[in-house]
Length: 254
Image (cartoon, rainbow, N blue to C red; front, side):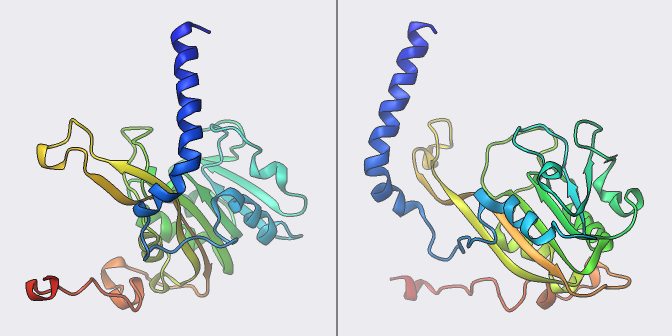
């Protein structure tokens, strides 16, 4: 290890030690009070555990979208004792049973599944609303979908880094219009941010609040929807009983 590298690592360690003391107080200002946090069902650290708990049963089938081993960690297949498992990915590779385009998922995999699981994939889908439809086609009524993706994260695996998702974005994809009941959607792992010295002058060094790394949803398919079309889906069945915030008059702001 070079001297410069050793000094940098020492500085990083010192900085982390300082932040561990003062960070909780400083970082609280960057949180949003209207963003739902996770419970055990959608917690990032144990998300895969929830998939195993829900799906590792005799006669069940689990489909993982984005199964290729690229980030380390034990693959889902090795954690299952009872359920059947199919690993799907865009490219062939370790832990992949079927490869192809997820926008045509129902044409590529055989049969129906009790659980569909995907992590760190939806941000790389050019048309995630189409993939949501495909998941609905291969999921049994009563089956569960577990999706984890990003709301705020570094640009990666370009050029195919297409979208970021809020909890509401995931709710809209897996909505009653498509036959789903949302059991929980959340955002978690807050990020502290600011605009850099390279931003437009009026933005430089301004804080950026309400950044969360992970966005998760667990939803149950409650019915098949024949002839589904996003163009015909009513907004009330996609966004639920919510609305865009009403305008605030200048007088109310004073």
